[in-house]
Image (cartoon, rainbow, N blue to C red; front, side, top):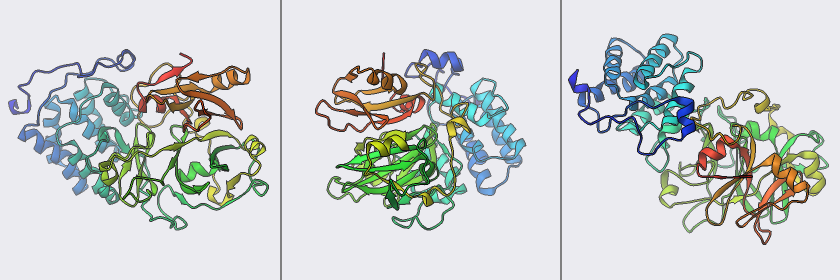
Length: 443
């Protein structure tokens, strides 16, 4: 067994000090070894995780391998345990993996939502990835769903935080989205109607309003909750519009006027999540994007350092939007697939259902904020309710080059010259975890 332990000193502290609120919520992290796995441990990891998935069986070899893994006292391996647990439904194996994770993390994991609790601890404690982590994770994920074999590659993405969202990849080519898929079905070039013809929408229905070059369009939440991704053209500009139901954020990215040699990205839902935020990718190049930031993080577009610019998205109600913008177009009812969800007051009523780790405690996790990045690069979040109240009282809200203004029942950020700054609404937990250095108004 001596070969399974490390000669390097163990440290309970990470390279970057954890915030006090993470320690308060999750306790002190365990000691973390550094360096490569021993040959024995490396073989045990392959036997327990890669071979068991490939063989679709858990036997004596896996049981012995797990004993060696637990004896290693290396919490880094729990990332792999978490990855495997996401796909395990068999109760006894789930219990085995939970017990191993509890031992390696030196913490008691509740039986309810054990995968989520384990992953929350890993994220909050910032446990380092194990050696050759992507290779092992890729083997697990692509064996289960081969469509991901074009996605799992090195890049600036943090693969530790990537988990399965419970759906399959949408890999339909551009402009074939009328074809059925076993996925969250994006919509390319969606059919639209005038506001007058949209009698199916109620005035209090939530819509995401976008304006480009004087043209207005409403994307009803009832549609975006089942499509989650639209590739559209508005005001002569191409747009990719993801909506993450989990983090309450509809965003609009310009997918034209790109550097020479880059073809328009066609955005799709991968079926993967990062800290409860959808992972989108370009179906042409299989480059993965950070959905919240618009950066390409893997693939050819990451190598070209592509960062998409954002247009403002106004979250408001249909009645106010069409009254303020009577010439607006709106997506047609058929795209809604007959479903109408309000996740925050239903499925997600108690907060995010997928692991997010620690959350900045300055606001409740699902508090609505208006997020934007200043000219100097500083992210700033404006608490929506307070901002609207202040603007209605006639108060000016300014932050560096940013000015907030009311727009059709929502809020947008503009520059001193009135130029659109690409703001959008989101839940606080999502904005603060993708912009950990964000300022918050009011301070």
